[in-house]
Length: 440
Image (tube, rainbow, N blue to C red; front, side, top):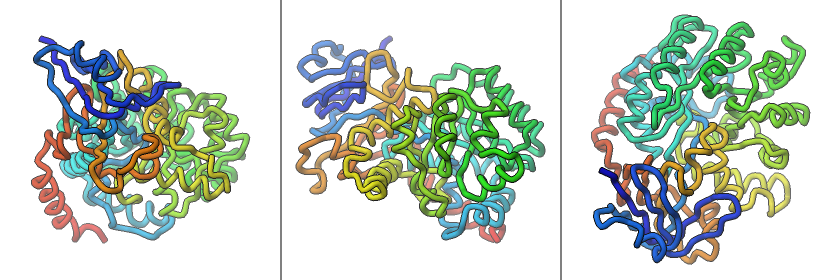
């Protein structure tokens, strides 16, 4: 039996190229697939009498936000080590803490907490990069969150793999088991060019090629990384990876803060997707990625939060809004990163980075129904002269009232329907309290 859903009663911003806002709009969904988008007068007669209805209440109906880079389970390390440069933060605090507390059960709990936070903030798809991938997948499916999920690799032992070879074997099993899953895209994830040897970087690229899977990697996040790779390899991190054959249209390159014009040319040539993480990069003082220059070159760009240990929230809308203002201030050009560009990067751009633009990122017939309704009931939401401007400069995560993922209503009237949030928060608090003695 077919299940129909009508999301109605708001201005639709479909984010299809060249589209205009649709006042008093509606989206018809059948078995998770978008069937039609238009005005209520056009769409409602097409719906069956037993269709479920989600009323946007005069707000905005937009595609779900896409978080192109995060470490979900690190919600449990939120605020643990702040105000530090990246290398010290990683080597002295994060990696030891992860070794101490991030077992399979803890990763699952932290991922569920992150999934709840994400969905309530309008994020319907995430690209994770962590360990114990099967437990990450269990958590995101419990929440009803769409996700790209890899098993991460480093040269040294991780919480779920004793060696790079072990991580590679886990990745292969993951890729085979979750191939063609409706909500989960399995992936490979070598941590960075300075933490994975050339031998294993090549093996990772070969595995991604074999399964046509995303390859997720941190690239050129800090000056220290760039200087190290230049000294050791005689090339920038981007050029080094290009020479190894790592870069392709499936590569999700997180950060890309310190990139030259030659690096940008390589990213464009290989059709690499860039996951920019403006707030994490600012907080760690890593720098500011040249996103406007990337967009001008036609490079695929999406926004990411990074993990909650370095942000310290998963509020992707807040991060995208900050970035759009940041580039105006840096360039002295108020037309830089206009409102519609910001929303495109937050939705369809992010989907394109993850290789999912044919399935999600815009509200169009044939795509999967990942939909967010933003309320306009609060004082800060009135008036709305331009709906794109409203999302870029006025809307807040607290305005997210309904969320649909793959046609399933997961948030209704600001309530997460898939998990018991108070119980989840209590479990996370309890787990962190038990772990305090291990966090030196």
